[in-house]
Image (cartoon, rainbow, N blue to C red; front, side, top):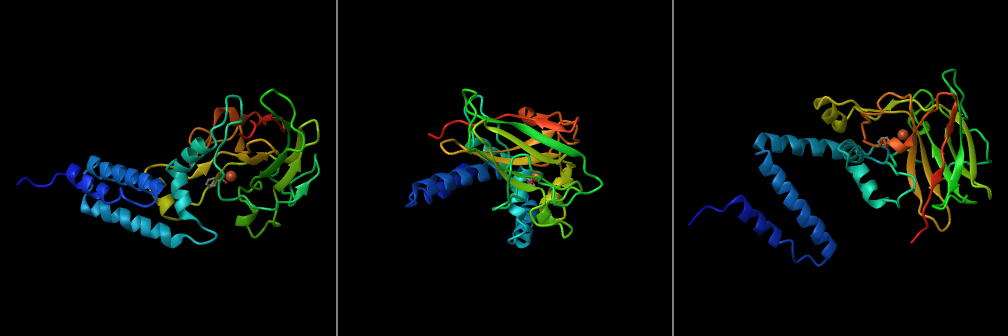
Length: 273
Ligand code: BEZ
Ligand code: FE
């Protein structure tokens, strides 16, 4: 009798997962198994390499706690987080392009009056920036009562939650548009900053000759009753790393000339279905 082949082995493994009582779980598990087996075969994974992978995943798990999520960082740097957003936030033609959420959003940021500054802790390195524009529907009509939840790093490249030197909620705010759909936010030019590189996800980046920097950006969640929310960023066109973002979040349509201290951008939302 002939020895069992990898293809026959795969079929046996898949067969035992096909009767799962949860059809969606069966779909996901069997697809993951097929791709994992194909990956191991494609690269002819050695036992040593398999164990290196196991040790890396173990170290990633051991580093995770409520503040540090190394698995999400791995997902980000492999381009998986961005792919999940592309699939789940896919918008109609003409809507604002989405990008990654990232781990630094904080719920309950201060509610700000239109035109207010989100800078609580000014610094000598600040380069002022005024962000203006409108929230529009697909017909170009302004959306009143839309909310912009905004966050970015201080000029030293750290978020308030990463720094003992910043007042909580520095560089964060929630703005609500009036009937004209307009917004105006006073802030500072965003700077490029490194994502955490001191763990196994960073080690994998560096071992592959990659860096851990993100280009300067301002984060937004734009929402309005009756419309699909969009999670996105605006990137400073003069920033470094626009073509090598560590987490693959840059989109051409989100790169804005901020060189004169202004950033003008209209967000476009589509109706909820
Ligand atoms: C961020 O832009 O805040 C971010 C996104 C992904 C990973 C780390 C940080
Ligand atoms: Fe960020």
